[in-house]
Length: 395
Ligand code: ADP
Ligand code: MG
Image (cartoon, helix red, strand yellow):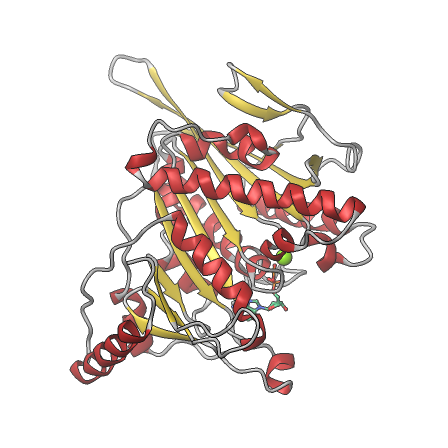
């Protein structure tokens, strides 16, 4: 994959609808895979700019006969975007800054299996050293976090990390092989200011390498004894949390304490929600995943919609939302990365993901500043065509 050239990069930046809201929704489109290219699969998504994605019309046939659609988000990462672009332009850096200031923040990747969730968060397997361009958002966030900590010379920081997996509504500790596979209880306590996982292992992290070790250990434990890792990971959610506690002396000798936290969530494959014809255990799994993703959807929609303020949010309906409740319900900041495939063969799942992401936050697109007037004209003509053709559901 080529590095974005300057023009393309300018387009991403110009289309950066990033605002000061407590939720940002971005889309990342992976490149066509070699397999898809060999099979003659083609791209069905286009990028009119200004944080928008357009999906081709679906020709007739079952479920087909639909018009092209245009969706708007804070930012759209085209297939050529790099892992570093995602750190720089997704709003992730703001989440880390807020977490250092004592807020509870969550970044999660949503999308069908194979759409690039794990690639975006952690990168390819065996990521340890040496540093590579493929390193994902988690590693890059850790690096940025330590940069920030060094700038706050007046404060003392304590970092602790935990890594868990939710499989079929059971919480499994990915850092403690002793209790690994033995489900842990989720409880509520006033002292913990919300839900917490009983006996969850937390690791003190003094350096970047310690955080990296947590990431690697968790990934390793997750795959132990799994014959088909991809099949398995499509059915479970993982949450890697970094607690950032700090103390700072104030004028009158009293210490100011801050309790920030950042969660990185790799969600179960969104396609699982429709596999309801399956039976027995798989049906139970599908229902659990369905429920947790649905409740998560409600929770984040309520973050951005003032009309929903005060309405009942069913956080308690799934382990996933219980554990994220403190950052979703409180005054934290959330980043949703919706991952999609550009391939025609995935068009239905792609539309489902784009809809889910659009429901999470209704975004009004702002006028875009473009560098090259000729390109601007082409894009605006394209957009006009697009809006004439599209259902334009979410604007
Ligand atoms: P998911 O976690 O959503 O199931 P993965 O992250 O495992 O999907 O991605 C599926 C495949 O696509 C992997 O082989 C991964 O390396 C590749 N891939 C995903 N996103 C990208 C990207 N942006 N650039 C290059 N390859 C990607
Ligand atoms: Mg994955």
